[in-house]
Image 1 (spheres, rainbow, N blue to C red):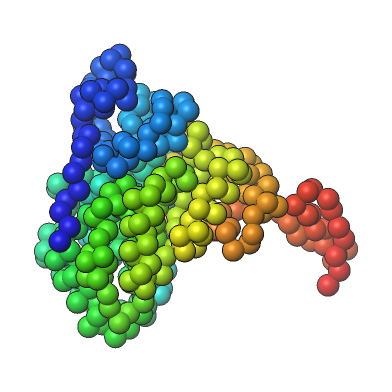
Image 2 (cartoon, rainbow, N blue to C red):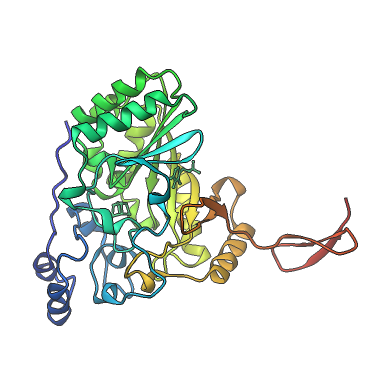
Length: 348
Ligand SMILES: *Cc1c(COP(=O)(O)O)cnc(C)c1O
Ligand code: SF4
């Protein structure tokens, strides 16, 4: 049985009390209180080693006044989920899979979150009727082979609610894969007990995508939570957001991806940061991202490397952001650039 994780720090005063913010910043934050959710678990607090300027954990989870600095091109729905919404909580963008935003709560609230506008708002919480409508849609559309449970964070749901959902999917023959996107294994690892993992068991293939942005998050407790998922036979992949001041250099990403492979998690996606409101202090340019990724390719085994992707605003999906490795010339040959910047001619 998992309980709602203890949100140790959930107010400006809590962050102040733990010395994570200064008095003057607290005053600024109080004025904007309620704009975005805040929460940090005790497990995350344990991994903080310093102030935001130097600590990748602090930067990700401690609110800052920089979040009130809105830019004109920032969006409430940066990846365009609304464009493919088929019913409340359900986004059907690709023919063979649906994204089911089954809960609006998270164990922590990340300062860079791309769904921050939608979270923690009780009016948006799905009712049982909403959930039934989403399940009816999935049951009726036989072209759907994968259900992606997201949120919020699906692993903050009770084991009982998760089990009920799994039972519904188990009855749908066309569903082959059930995927969870979650941060809980790293931010509240003690919730991922072996009993919890047992409750996920199914004759369908279960995939858990672990969201993590820095190797410092892979604490011994997090590794043991991941190990429990692994022992239950779950396929483990990961998702990382490229964030300024957190992981925007090849060495940091290399340590993270290798650390993940060590615990049997295959890095799947490195996301270019989305244009969510009040997140410009985290943003990295495409050129910088490409350069980081090119340097990474020269240093790390291919199996440790995720795809570096951009989610096109407006709901047009994810595409790889890659350097122009292979360029067609007007004479029909190609100029191929190697990882050191050297160029080579190639003919078909
Ligand atoms: C990202 C996303 C998916 C999943 O895409 P994958 O490439 O399979 O990870 C599905 N639906 C929506 C709406 C998405 O944004
Ligand atoms: S866990 Fe995911 S959905 Fe929740 S705040 Fe963090 S990024 Fe957003």
